[in-house]
Image (cartoon, rainbow, N blue to C red):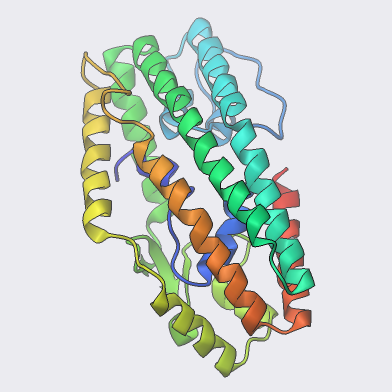
Length: 298
């Protein structure tokens, strides 16, 4: 598995009703913002790795041969990255709240939602340089052997997370529910599987068919573009272990920006569809699920 794929999949396009789950998932702050930073010590820890915002940082945090100075620098890089992404995460939480309010009222403020979606895209562009700067600094900080180990640790971590389930239409692994509903292997953005969400909302067969029709009417991710991104991510991973590495020249963050710009409009369409398809009680429950998950991630 290519190392930067984890970052892209945080904001990757999701087919159909799964886009609603992504409202909360992408609104979550980066790992590490809810906990006090670890006191740097020689050698990495799993706790530090679990809080890292960048996958390669997570791999580096697990290195057993880190010096105290390297551990301190890694924490500094993580803090800077979290700070750089804070404005986007705030805007995404605000978008999630707009969606929740729209569900409750039975009418989405599309002008406000569109403005927030545009803002998120702009902030994602601004955040891209911070991601590239972080990887460049990480490359300079680690020895060649450490860079190779960090890459392998990152691959192993992702393999452990993504080995369950079948592939969905956007290339991600997942488990197929009834009526063509799919969810990822770990569960939906509300901490529950999509099939469970359908059960929680007690969707009728007619409602499931209506959502399926909405899915089919929406543009699907370009497989050729997705394949191109995978090749690009592979090149980034290979360059990281070499002596020469320039994250900006390699276009680190470009794919994530595209995904951020595409996902907002897709989620908005599904919210509008949900307002039409769901009953008032179901809309209220879905709004509560969005807020519940965002609150857990604060």
